[in-house]
Length: 297
Image (cartoon, rainbow, N blue to C red; front, side):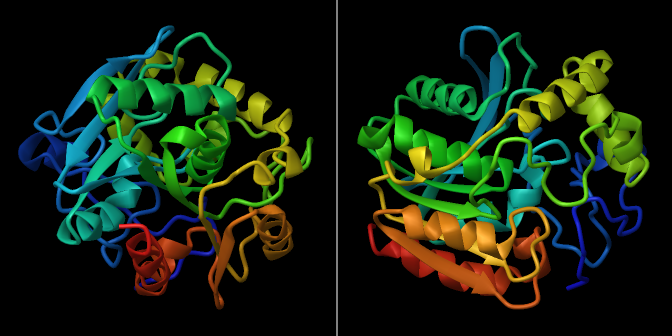
């Protein structure tokens, strides 16, 4: 599989908006012909999805498969449910029920008026689960932004959390802008790396005219974010942290720090991998995630 060094690296163009209209193909950021191709139009599948009213906005979610429930949460800013497609496919094959959540402001979910903090995103998830009538504990798999949301959910709602897999998520000091991304980065700066992705997103998003406003709001919120011992030390559910050895966003040191704070932590470091570790080396990540989930099945 073709390696990508960072989430903002251009990997080549894929499907066009015309193909979207013809065969419902969905694209994730940085997808190339060598990348994993989702088997379903994750994030825009009208047959599997619906909206949940979470108060100030509406959150899109999709359900696949049957079995023990697993919530799947994508990355932030350039993230979308489609990037988690290989997880969803393998979870369904392993007889799990997958609840794929589209975070507020991403893809088909509306932006809302509340600041998109991690406690807020955890609350959104709680309300989505109420909408599904899932009453048992859930497992959570989140990447980057989705990983932090999963960790906050586990801290805020321990009675509903079975176990957590957080990929590319570690200790986060206030004012730390992850990786090489600058605090003043504008939407136009990141849109140029994969214009075709954003072209498709414009056709998916219910409020495409607010994309730049949402992007700036999200960046401002990230600048004010802290994820520290206050979160990690209060997570009672078994938690697996997965990190690429060369992750520039959630550095190996930051993930090791988080691991040491977790009461029931496990750690998997994937050699020579970067932030999107599961896109670079899905088999290695899945070999860590699958037995971890099975322990509580």
